[in-house]
Amino acid sequence: MSSFISIAKVGELTDGTMKEVKVQGHEFLLAMAGGKYYVADGRCLHMGGRLAQGKLEGTVVTCPLHGSQFDLKDGHVSRWLRGSGVLSATIKVLKGSKQLGVYKVKVEGDSILAEI
Ligand code: FES
Image (cartoon, rainbow, N blue to C red; front, side):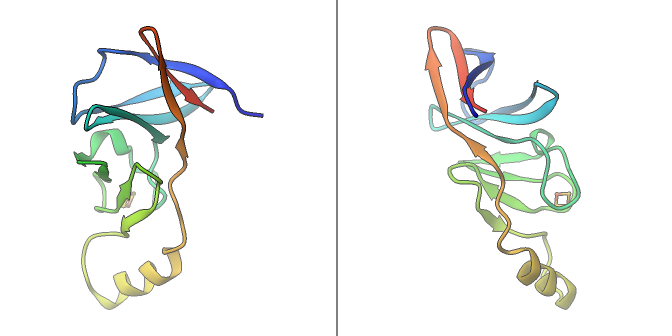
């Protein structure tokens, strides 16, 4: 059963930035884009790259290791690995149905809460 848990304080992030937060032994990515907060699993679906160390463009985060991209709005894979070779194309087909876990977020007072 999920419940809303405080994961950070308002003001810890500025728009267009992200950070890793550890809650209950699990690593999450907290990002702020367009004035809105997003919470997702902190590790890449490919080989566990730390997404908070990647790049945030709008709501799309790019993994720092091999360039996979995930849209934080719903967790869908925008790009599976960078590159366009046959191996990359094959992997994209095999992994295309994966989705990054994303969580509902709300702000209460000065706390950012995620439904985990
Ligand atoms: S670990 Fe993220 S793309 Fe490989």
